[in-house]
Length: 194
Image (cartoon, rainbow, N blue to C red; front, side, top):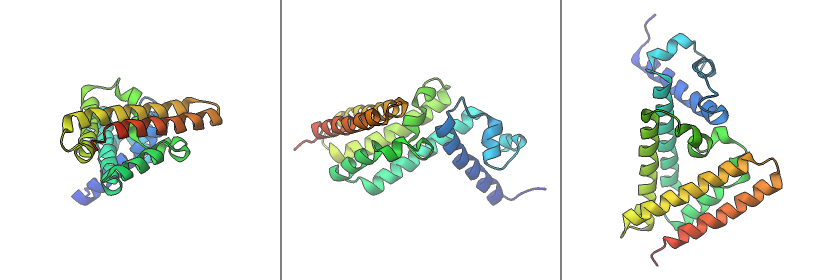
């Protein structure tokens, strides 16, 4: 049976969405094609109708997850106050405790570093778009410096969240999150030209 273009696109979208959750929950290496396709309600054989390889799927998921994060930031954080709220939400127990619904960076960064060039390029492109968007708002007179500040801010956010998730002591994890907010806001304030 031949399906129309709309059906194929809807199926591809379902694979990307369910794979995004599974990859962030179990990791790239911990999520085989069979599991990813089962999550989407499909057989392994259908995978290659949509993606050339697992790396192709991971690169697509990473690119789309970062694009969605960028869109949410555009809606929420057009100014410094919005960025402060983003930082507080990002380094919250709610985000820490639900990696499958959260940021792909904190959930997958260590594995992306071991992936092939296709995945790394998708990640680099998506992250730089976010950094440049924010830099244009907070340091319009010096976007290059703003980009460096944003990348430092992201490193603080991602590392803090990864550390908080790795700790077995919930109270210590909460302290790490609170200190991360403090550190991230200090970085953001250092970029303030006023």
